[in-house]
Image (cartoon, rainbow, N blue to C red; front, side, top):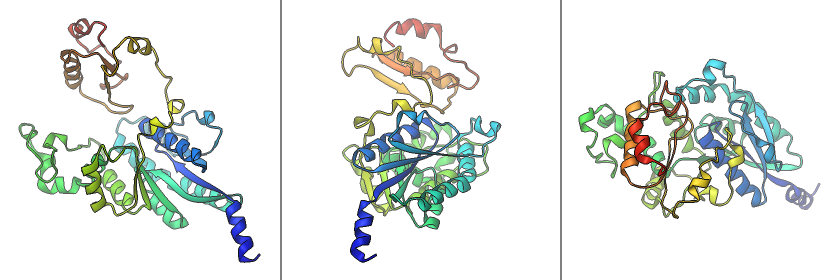
Length: 331
């Protein structure tokens, strides 16, 4: 085949992207939203997903879905130690992901796979991409500021900020304004190296071919300037994704829509929304502190209290009766 014939054949191939979401709710939704955005722009989309926390992807017939085993035991899959879970997933998914991606690359007779897009916390995928000689773009589902804070953890350790006493929590972090010591992300885990997962994520993100954020520059302009100094990769802020495509059908739980009728009776832009996500846990006294903060705000609020948010608690039984009386139908 001459060069012109090869060019025509290459142009006739559809351009395919392979996306690999982290199997946690706050990471699945943005990745599915991004997949819809990219599909709308003309890309064919393949999703690789673990069997762990598999959402209902049947509502996305325009995606090709490939399932891989995660290798987690029942005990490992039910752990409340999120750092341990992320560490295990990054160890156990290496071969299943490598085998799946290698098969897709060998089968791309009709589709040209341009690159893979993986969640930043899938740090092992950079080595896989390098091995298979395919580009990896990273989706960071958190803010730019949070990534910079994680990248600064070695500095925080060196300066001793991570071991300050409770009485010093309001002290400023001189090297990282406007943070105070209490704002530094802390990690509780049974693993011997609590910050290694985060440090691996930062290190491998710096090696990627690109970095996508679910945010926009006007919201975090100073943070973007700092990011460009530390992460020398092309960066794309194209969020918020939900403005383009909703991802409600990728929910791991059935949606509770009982609050909608109450929300419809509230004035526009008047309701405070509070949610700690799908996996975070907090102490009882912190939950009660949040409760009274909302009560004393004198504002209508919608607070998502997940069963198990407080370890050992079923749901709302630990909230004081006085709090429930004080808010009446305001929250």
